Image 1 (cartoon, rainbow over the protein chains, first blue to last red):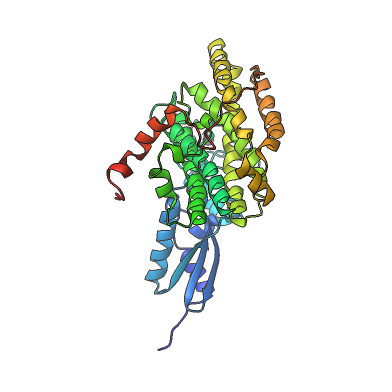
Image 2: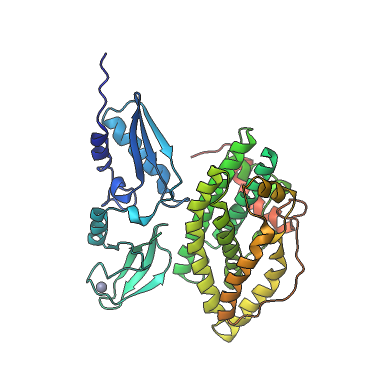
Length: 155
Length: 251
Ligand SMILES: [Zn+2]
């Protein structure tokens, strides 16, 4: 029997089609939580890092990765958790950042706050709370269009 | 070494577990919605840190206990958290003052644990320290906002600081477990963390127009497990009842 192993590049493409469970406009690859994909003999090892240590989405992310790869015929799969180096919002892809803003979530910035309102693009914004609806977000408000919006926390 | 390491990891994990439970008691009750969400998220981060510390503790112990078993199947005397963290919440100001005092300690301590000779501890500390820094930013800002706020909020924050102060010293008390960790390069000596902690807290408390108490008396017995207060037992009855009434329940 010939065992065909899909290429690592192909696996990355498949993973790029798995949406983040809480912000489905970006993929797990955009989010930067997939740290490595490698074949060890006939076992595919996918290394995943958590965003926040207590984030309930972490187990869903693992389940979604497993489901997607099994659907593509990957039989032997091992998910490895990697804590170090710790996940940083710098690993969000450029494409992911643009998609976040389109979706109404201001992307993270090292300055510690959003550049502009994702709705009207005004720079006149203020923080409402350091925390938001999920561990990765904070609440901000636009002082021009008066809309509240989520800001992806920078860590 | 491995029994001291187990003990040391319990201290780290029990601190975040018990504080997390206390903070989660605010869920649905906080003064405003934003604070409610912030408290719940803080509790969630602390639970995540607990899973990592107690998970590693169970691994080191090697008796097949995982983080859940350690959290839900130990009795009061098995817990190794600081007495400060089992204190009842009191009002919102007192909850935030306790959070602030611990956040500052957590930030300083994790800063050293990142350099631990045990790579598993270093990796957890690296992850947790980012969250701890974020927590300190919020609790510190809240202490300033309420301390330098109205007459009433100022009074309540000074009362909170005065009440919690005798529980600060335990964070920096060293014993033989700590000595073993220091000798193995695993962890810093708690005594040596006080200076940095003082610098951080005094900076915030001064801006908050609060008076730093000068008392040096310290209640102890939590991190060694020798003497917890009666409050921990009450906390555990609510935190552990489900796993005790229905062992291994899942849904
Ligand atoms: Zn706007």
